[in-house]
Length: 567
Image 1 (tube, rainbow, N blue to C red):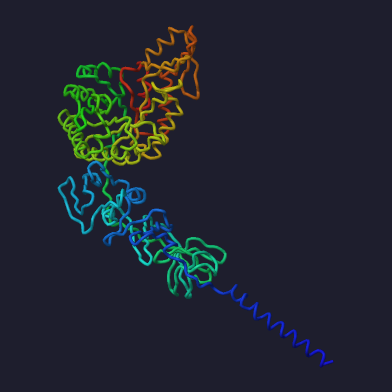
Image 2 (tube, rainbow, N blue to C red):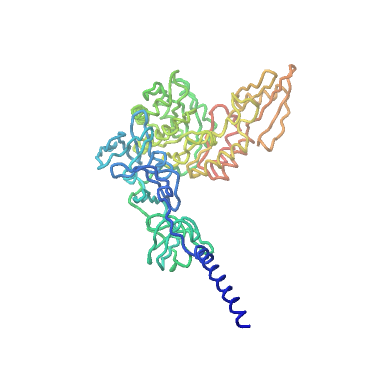
């Protein structure tokens, strides 16, 4: 019996032995840690010796920095996007500009030199700006002169840590030598060796692995069992640059500003009659100035007697400058895109203001092209410096904010200017292809809401229309005529138009059909529609109201406005 069993045992042992030879390596392979290293240049996306991928906060972003002559640079668009959008490139002049509340700081592209309008100048130890192909790069050391952020560059491979926020974060200590892996899993490729005592920032915790960032800004995964001493810390913020304060003039009363259409010197004589019933008016904006050439010259209807009379009536004068009532051939973009013409325009405006004792400048630049958006806001910054120095109120007129006109940059206007004015009308205008209200209540409400989302309400003025449009729709198309409140009332009476209140528009609406089939329509602006608009403005607690324009209103409007102003 024993002789029969022994061979069986031997055979089974041989089978187990042979099986172990083949199975054991597979089991070992399954439970052993992978030793393959990741291609770090591919991991970061390095593309050449001068290319530097950027880790912004805790994320590898698509934009890269440039390493040149031992200094780090970012392309201008990224500087504006991530660090400081107050930098401005004057492409026509080949300059980079930074504007503070008191000075314009300029460097010629491709140089190490800078100078400012306060008489200061300097030369940096690096080239401040440089072109690589068609892309403009700015040295981060120069950006740091005017911005609080930190950066640190690393090699092997090139990458950079860029930090602009210093929020609370959780850190942990590596308690045993281990590896940082590209993904969670023991077979994942290795990014970096981690040693006992190393500190890592915890980004995301999972069941057995944790996503972390190391001291040299590698982002990967480490096993949970290798982490200890977790704690929450708040990094010390960088405060190398002391941001100067943009001081503003703020009136301690509700603004009530009437636009005064002055078509020539004789138009100044109508002031007293136009404001006779406007008992709550405290500011007037005469349309005195317009661009007159492409070098920053202006046409002026300014009058000393007008200013004197306005002041006697208790009115401040915020003289208006526009870009559309001057001679033909004026190119707003050309004026705004050159430092010399901007400076000339500003000097001309300030000289007029000082000469005539004007209290403020109101800028009404319409139809500025999108490509000149940054030129426009730089002009407002530079004009604000001059107005601040002379204690002149600077107000800026704007369309109701929409996605397509966001380059007017209401947020920046709200910082550098004293008042941001929204022209809360022209919802439907002369060129509209369909009839409609000049300023429905939803249009007004949305315009104010979208503005105060970007600008402190104490700086926002909403302008209301003292006019309406009479619309005619026929087989040949849609036309309209802008008319005063009185003319609109007469039109309604002469055509026996029945008016009904339209809640959606916040106005009375009327229509009739001519004998030739033409549909005639009107959305009335009157005391009740104005009161509805003012009620919305009170809700948002904004700085005040403006009216376009004096002389277009009926007298019953002013008590309504006075109730709003005197609340």
